[in-house]
Length: 177
Figure 1 (cartoon, rainbow, N blue to C red):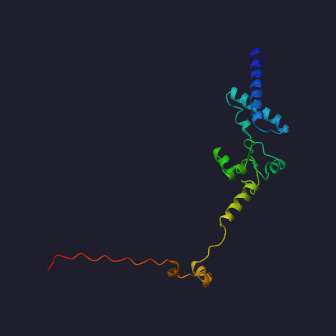
Figure 2 (figure 1 turned 90 degrees about the vertical axis):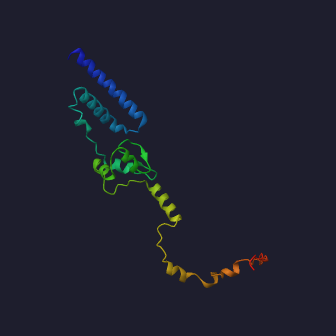
Figure 3 (figure 1 turned 30 degrees about the horizontal axis):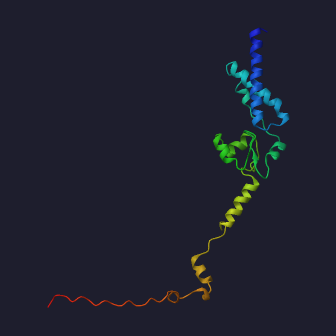
């Protein structure tokens, strides 16, 4: 091995370590996947340095295990497999990344019933909608008139206060005659 090749490999390892350290400092990464993360970043850097031949091979998505899928669903939020952060709803997060809910589910081999909103967020929205009266069937106007008891119907003339009559001004005499 030549000295230049060895220096290039050392530079790739240092660059890989810097990238992974920066990623881990901002994201929660399970200890078991740290080795895979290092290997995939190193392979990507080596592939890019050699002309991009290995870059497409390293873009393979790691499919989450059933335990990771179950752990990603919490009452307060859903942990994204894209960046490892927790979100109340994934739709806007996925739209920013150019994915749909179906595309996200197929990309990570998630079940069709994988939620896109957290349970607490859905419950809060549901409670707010019920508070506003949404979800109740509409009352037909003809039925609502029949339901009103007669004692609540009030004569409008009884409510209006009596106004004193105005004194009329005499008309000006006209100059005809």
